[in-house]
Structure formats: structure tokens, C-alpha cells
Image (tube, rainbow, N blue to C red):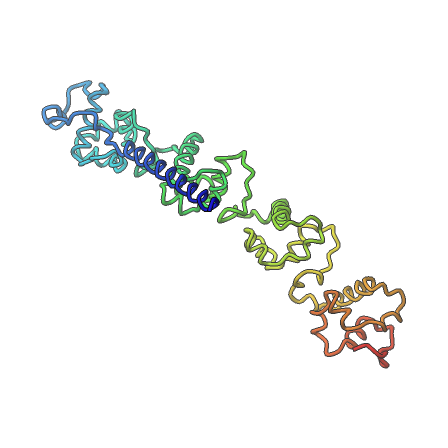
Amino acid sequence: MVGRKAVTTKGVRKQAVTKKRALKNKAANARRTRHAGAKYPPVRRIEAVWLDGPVPDGYWDRVEHRRLYVRWLGQKLGFRKREDWYRITTGDFKRNSGGGLLNAHWSSSAIGAVKECFPDDDWKDWLFGCTPRRFWRDPRNHRRYMKWLGQELGIRRPSDWYGVTNQDFKDNKGGAFLRHYGDTVSTAIMSYLPNHDWKEWMFSKTPQGFWLEETNRKRYMIWLGKRLGFKHLRDWYSVIGDDFDANYGTQFLRLHNGSPVAAVRDSFPRHTWNEWMFARVPIGFWDEPENRKRYMRWLGRKLKFKRPQDWYKIRRHDLQANCGAGLLVRYRSCIDLFRECIPELDWEEVPVGIV
């Protein structure tokens, strides 16, 4: 009963924290959706002098007059909340007696007009229809966007970024931004948090050409070995394809034609590997006569045979117990295998016990 009560209390406390966080986010969203011009009174018709023809010389040089026009334009377009301003275009200015003003004072930038007239708002340039020219050339804007994107996606810790995809960027006005990183999510994220120990294979896609680098393949295999609890090189004999699939290694294994053996040999080339000791030998391995002879030489050493005549003591069970069951499938009789691999002995009269 004590344990159940403790769990219940913990659950109630967690719900309270979640509710408090939701209310806090709701309040923050309410502040963000505040109309950018809400603190200003509506622009009266008598104030809109630009509607009566050319404005007096020097009229647009005063910032309060420019702001007055932008507020009026918002009314004209029916903007009611802050987010509506992200829909503003240069065409809106040109169609409403503001084309000359836009060119002369804001370099034809509707975004520049909005930011000058409502400087107290934290405008996200990428949410407008088109970001300013050269905007993404500034690394500071990259960091601003990534910080904002993390908030939008609910990222709380660096590892949460592994779940972010190209579609997340596209859905959050980041398509043009991502092109600066070759449309590679991992590159963008790693540039944003360069001090984190990233594992590129844990992203939805690895960078193009990543697995072609030997150091990257070796990094993955060392990491995988730790994940699987391997302490010695011989532990790799137990690895199977599912181990790669369950640990972000599907693309990596595809580079080795789906063969765990090939992956292990590539990453640890100085070690002498016996392919038959793996869970599965490579496809077509036993088709090679030299591989069959290699196995038999190894088996002889394993069984401590010192003279050729010692082979007469061999039993089918010896092969089955020493990773040779797959090899036996190729032969109707053990004798056929022995004749091929140990031709120096006379197998015509088979000693009693050999089957």
C-alpha cells in the first residue's frame, strides 16, 4: 500500500507540473499573438494624407509618419493579430499608395517596414513570405532560427534533436535555411551545437558520403560494441544483422551487402577472423574450396590433431560442435568432405566409428 500511495502521489505531482507548464505556455502564446499595433489608436481618414495625392516634401522623412502609414495599411488589410503581419508583401504597399515609400525608405523590403514600425516585437524574419536577401548568410540568424525551432518542436535536451527530420524544417519555414547545409539535418544541428558528442548515425539520415569514410565506420563499430556489451574482439562473433538494425546501423550494413561478417572484418582488419564462428557465414562462403580447407585446418588444430592419422578419430559430432554444421549440409557423407580436404589419407576403408 505504501508503494502504491507513493506512485499515486508522484503521478498527481507530475500532472500538476504539466498543467502549470501548459498554462505558462498558453500565457506566452497569448502574448505572442498580441496585435503588433494594438497599443496605438486607429488611424483616422484625415490622417491618411497619402490618399489625397502626393505627400508634402520631407513627409516620409519623419519616422512617425512612416509608422502611421504602416498602421493604416494593417487596418486596410484587416490585420487583427500580430501573426497577420507575416503575410505582408511588397504588393500590399504598391496597391495602397505606398510603393514609393517602400522603395525610398525600406529598400523595397516589407519586412524592414514592419520591423521599423513595431520595433518592440521580436520578429522572426523566416516567418514572412520571403526572408530578406542575404539573411541566411549571417551565422547569428542561423542560431536564432535553430533556437526558435527547438522551442517550436519541444526540444529539451541535445539528444532530442536526433528525431528532427527534413520535414520538420519545411513545416517550420526552414527549407531555405536548410539548403545552406546541403539539405542535411545532421549538419545543421551539429553546427548549432558543435560541442556535443554527436553520433551521426542516430539521425534519420547520415550525411552524404558519411559511411565511405573509414574513420566513421570504425567510430560506429566501437560505439555499437559498447552498446552490445562487447569487451573482447571475440565477442563480435555473436553479432547478427538485427543488432545493426536495432542500433541505427541499417544504412551502414547495407554498405557491406547486409553482411555483419564483412562489417566486422572491415573495421578490425588486423585481427584474424574465422568466418565460420559467426552466427552466419557470408553468402557463398562454403562454395570456395579454399574456405573449406581453411576450416578443416582450423578444426584439426582445435581438436589437437598432430598426425594425419589422427583424422581417423574424427566424428560428425566434432564438426557440429565446432561451427561446421553448415559445411556438412553440402555433403551426403562426412567421408566426401574428408576426401576433398585431407586427400593424403586413405578413406577407402573407413575406420569404425566414422559416419
